[in-house]
Image (cartoon, rainbow, N blue to C red; front, side, top):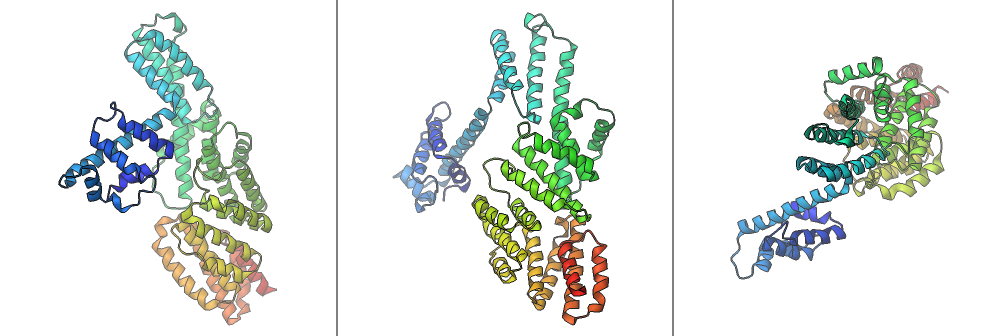
Length: 485
């Protein structure tokens, strides 16, 4: 069979790109090997699926070199060369997507060749284009740095005598440092935010000493950089994740609702997740009103189409289930059902089964239709992602309890404990404890129900009340409350 690596790349080309790639292969500037051109023409017949027995290497060789003895090494070389051209073509596509990078590369070449007149013409054009950028992300600052750097190189080889840059002073160097510092701060803080966010759900070992020094400087000495939107955004995201203060949440929410035109979708998507994590945390601290706050945030998220980390990819599967759960938490049952129907086709094919069935199971559980909830949860064929293996197990236990399937509950609890112990390294300490608390209280609840031992229910209820870091705590309290009353 022809290399899966090559066919995999070619299958991802859209029809226009595949045709253009053919022109790329046929261009003598990029390729002079006639056999590589022949291989492209042969493979073209099987685009885009490339699933045909005629892609067997010996059949391909016979079709291209009829009458010659099969030579695997020679064919591998031809395949390799076509693969390298495919890689070059992808690099070319990426290069032409960014006119500014192309322009900056042109400036570098003009500078190197000391083509002063053309350099000055393009410098002004590129400067205008960069200043017109709306989203001041790290790449914006880096492009400004690169532009100023080319200006400095130009001034150096013209010995600062050109009237076009008569205002050149040491301030130019300061300006270059400003852009480079802004680039670094926005990149470093964003990465720090990402690592802290990941650490809330899984164990990650990392040394943060240097970035902590930077944080200290920004908070206590700086009066300039932290007012830049991107730096301010990531600075307060870090503060909210670390300190969980309402004042930081308010600042970030104001940025969220007022910066749709100033921040990229990726930034808004990440910010929304940080805001949601804070609301979840406050819910575990017995603070009221955050279920409604979460639901309102998700509605804004849908209005702004912030349901994926980047454009042209699938709906985030974990967010999908969280949106359903937040709607159910405020008893918006019809809204949750409409949402599921409207957006389910935007999920990745690999995750549609588990996400949709889990969502419907949650919906019917909230409506107290436990038989239907069980049907949907049992309809899940396979679960690849650990982040779904956990909530599916949680929901299954609750359904078993509501249906009086206590024997099944006991088996599921034992299975769940083994699963947790085997995956402890994938969970943060706080989350691991949260799940263990749920299993501990759930196990005692089942035993009390089995033995009808109501004398112990008051103590169990009190312990759950005093254990805010407990998964499904509200449901557990509702069950103990039913027994007490």
